Amino acid sequence: MLQVSEELIDLIQNRAVVKVIATLDERGEPYAVPAPFLQWSERGELVHLEPLEKSATNRNLLRSLWFGRTVSVTVYGPLGESFVISGHPIKAHICGPLFRHYYQQLRSIIHDADLSTAWIIKPISITDETYSRVKIKEEDEFPFSVHLDRLRADHYTTERILS
Image 1 (cartoon, rainbow, N blue to C red):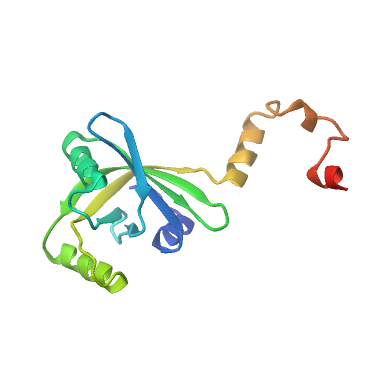
Image 2: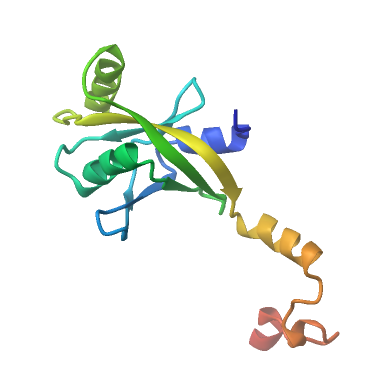
């Protein structure tokens, strides 16, 4: 099973954190939309609550389930934390106890909400795209891949230009 950090799980569970789900349409074109009801399950899977039956996302997720296509979820936190999770839709709940649980949960957030499908997405990879961490890693791996002005001892900073 994929190792997932507590930091990422906390971000996913936080409703104030921006989450975007990207799918592929019938032509293979990417389609990305906010996923405000995305959450992490106790089983280590993503749960995407899709309120609209005829939405492009719902159709694309169904196509991904049928044809084994990968979907992507981006999670962007308030302090610049950024993660990209790739996964496969493995189940679409449209009735039953799990569906009812998520339907009631959604109705507690939006009084007149409908729930078309509770999508279960199995993560297959997680990439930490947090700028500060990626920058350190990149500078360690490619120490000579910098702009020449950063190599000068007296390079200009924003503070120096403004003063």
